[in-house]
Length: 228
Image (tube, rainbow, N blue to C red; front, side):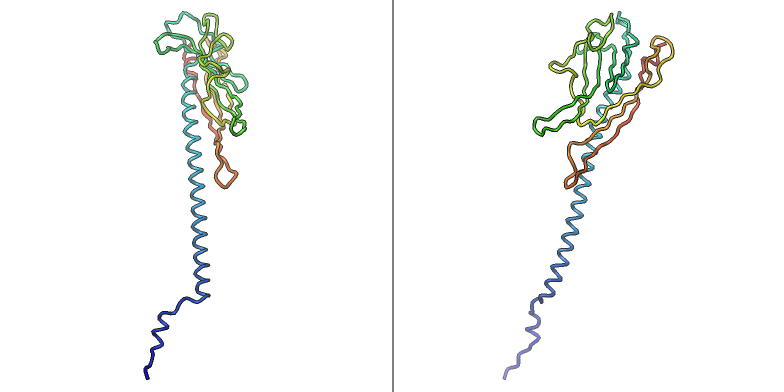
């Protein structure tokens, strides 16, 4: 009679039900941990991208504003028009108005008025309302008699406050510093402090968190400081 080796059959035995359940439980834990780790990394990446976008947009505007503030009160030597000291830097509520001489693309001298202000904007697609920082670039109509919003013409047609340069602005605060005590620009601020609080339009996926950052910076009104 032929004897069968039972060990040959045991070598091909399958997994038991308990072993399968243990393997399934371990796999579930590994998969859940991997997904949680991926979700955390994805949210961190979204947060970093939102912060980078806010920083990039803000720094571009900060550079532009600092450039305009430095120029405030500048009178070109070729200009026959007196620079009105009370109009070089005007701060009212959350508006900033600056006046200085400049040259256009044709190298023609003119006097410009630049205004920064907030304007509420409602999206036609989402219905959400937010604030945008506007920059109005204007030409003084008769600089010999002074220049303000009513005596200047905007270079942008069809708008009352110019063009938007920054979106999702939660707040825009302007503070004048170090008013000059004597000389041509007596009473005019020699420095301007700006506070901008800027948000991101997108919330972090799976949360109610949105990015919001504060930017504080100072700009010297160079011409006011230098002119005796």
